[in-house]
Amino acid sequence: MAPKTIGARMTGRANSIIPSSIIIVGGGASGVVLAAHLLKSPNPDLRVSLVEKRPHFGQGMAYSTLLSAHVLNVSALGMSAYADDPGNFSRWLLERGLATPEQAPVYAPRSVYARYLKELLDELEAREQQTGRLRLIREESLSISPTASGVEVALANGTSVVAHLAVLATGHDEEPGAGQGHAIRMGSEADSALDPEARVLVLGTGLSMVDAFLSLEQRGHRGAIVAVSRRGLLPSPHRKGNPIKLDVADIPLGTQLSYFVGWFRDLIRENQKAGIDWRDVVDGLRPFNQKIWQNWPSSAKRRFVEHTKAWWDIHRHRMAPQVYARVTEAVQAGRIRLVAGRIVDIAAGYTVEVQSRHTQRLERFDVARIYDCTGIARDISTTSNSMVRSLVDRGLARPDPLRLGLDVTADCEVIAGDGTVSAKILAVGPLTRGTFFEIDAIPDIRVQCARLSKRLLG
Amino acid sequence: MLTKKGKYGLKALVHLARLPVGQLAFVNDIATGNNIPKKFLDAILGELRNAGFVQSRKGKEGGYRLARPADEIKVGHVVRVLDGPLAPIPCASRTQYQRCEDCNEATCQVRHLMLEVRQAIAEVLDQRSLAEMRDIAGDEDLSVPLKIQA
Image (cartoon, rainbow over all chains, first blue to last red; front, side, top):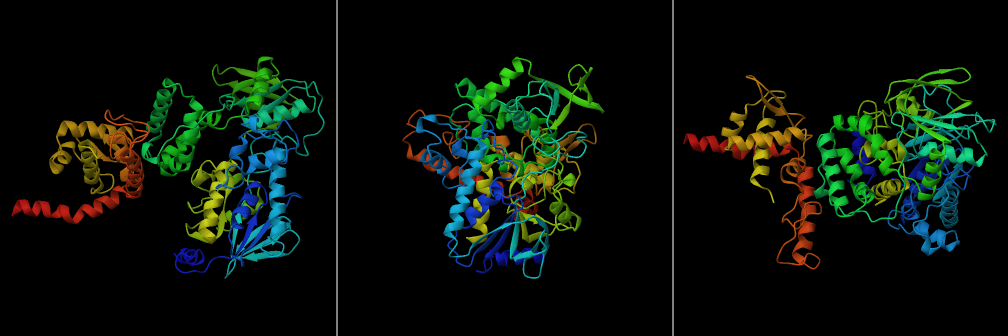
């Protein structure tokens, strides 16, 4: 239990020593949001080092797209970097004439959001120039190692940074998952010029497939798009609404999955009878999603991931109405074909054999390219992030029981291979999916960062 | 408000939590040991089984046991399943809301305070596991059979 004692001391629970130097590994959206929350502390001794391998901070994978059709999947009110100031991003948009007050809800282009995070970081950098509390490091992190007094992060240029603790904010995987065969990521180097009439296949029918479709349209691609997933379900569109009000006292916690799903279906049905849109019920549950997840027995979590998540995702992770209109039009016109089934075989060329989920029949598609749009969740043990892998290999971290991410405590502390809780290595964002469940989007990440900052710095 | 159903359900679960892991208990033993009407207990155990807190086995050797370790099941989880949303009075619930005939819920101060009270109830009951409840009850329960003997 020794590490836990250090944690108590450093977080000021036992006495007043507070960790004053923190390295954030990963300067994408989660890293910037965490830095912004940490720097709200008045502590003059605080030192925050933000390490990012890309040339630009605040973009990561999600916000590096330049395509204006790639809009945020969450309206502006959900996208403020600050948990306690939800209007921050909306005001920023209004001040720059990028939105008008009548326009709400606004689904801004992701490149605009990257600019917002960049400006926010620029401001912080300017403000902290005198204090020296913020250091931006444009370099790749190779590994994290605990030392007697804290941690050391080795960088690709041969130097290293030391601090009391490090927070992993490395976000999503950059490479397609193993076993996706010939599939490539859209926009990667392998995504070379393509005959505009060629038929392409997309693995996945969710929001990433929609992004791929928009990119292909932008490039002037005219060939058909075959999109394959287990269920072939397309995400729903947003609609302006008002989430219902729930308290934790209303929600059954810790039950079997079927019991919970029954309760939730009844709740939607009752609300629909009263003329309330199902979206308002789904969104009303959102503040409690992490609590619900954390209280489920592991059998319920497993069942949810296997059977219910696909349904949940299309209702919960929706797209802007204007994007939905474009996609459904393309589906109706036959430009996109949604297939519920499973890939049986991929032969050179490519000839892809798909077995239908409903009829079990085999169908062959000749396609010029296969795009991996299977989404962001994947088995952490197959991660392409070498730093995360090395933490696991050295026993400093372990996958969570469902292998959705790293095993962390509810306080974001990374749990080592032998089960001890680290006070020096923490994680935020998608890496903590196993414990926090929905932690891919800004509305959830900003709350996680606010809580962590408060716990670390008071 | 904890109903009789909620109270009996918790007593039955504490009974099961006292048994060695995996051992089954007869419904009759739970009923007589805790002074619960047997028919009522059958219904309660059925609901607890649907929610995934207990498992049953049929037949001569049949009975009930906890489906999960007693320290994983929180008291608040059980009460919501048996009694519905945690609420000190029926109007202080968002999903099972029952309007009071004699007051206006928008301006009723009592309701507003009770909405706050239910948060506090949830906080206490969601922190405490069956195992903890079993261990608090331990001392007092021992005195019961002693009194009977005396």
